[in-house]
Length: 223
Image (cartoon, rainbow, N blue to C red; front, side):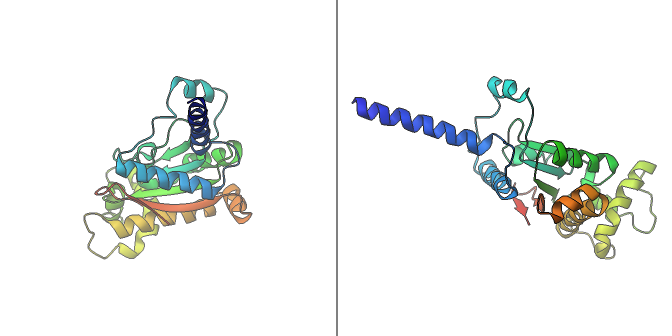
């Protein structure tokens, strides 16, 4: 009986240590490991078997000392696409930057540079989504049409070059292809607009991926 109890206790301790290793972000997490965290998290989100660790008072206390998010996620601001939820990630695990249509400006780029330079994150994921309102707005404002305000005009102007190929085609309701083109274009533009990210990517220190969240299914496709 004592032997059975000891084996059982050892399994519990081992299980707990593995869970902490898998989910608590640590400095040095490779892009491949980080990507796996995101893929596994989306699988849990789809199955409904969500994590219960990572958001207790002990986690709050642990993170006061600092953060080491394993991934940077640049996503659309759409309320239906929160990265922490769709990837089932907890406190301190994602560094999230959100703008409508994943649009880029000095502030969003600088935020990503900060996470790379000072927090040790090595995976940057640019995530668009189906039925994106910002992409739809960009598609409807080619040819100098007004988006509604000077700020909105700047927003759609950032998206226009990435979806130019779809400017004359009828837009589908889900705008899947233009949304993919925008997400991939943002990932490319990050390297063009940031010397820091360009050098680190060239040296293999960081990796950029593009993704698309499907509002109908909850699935994140990553390329």
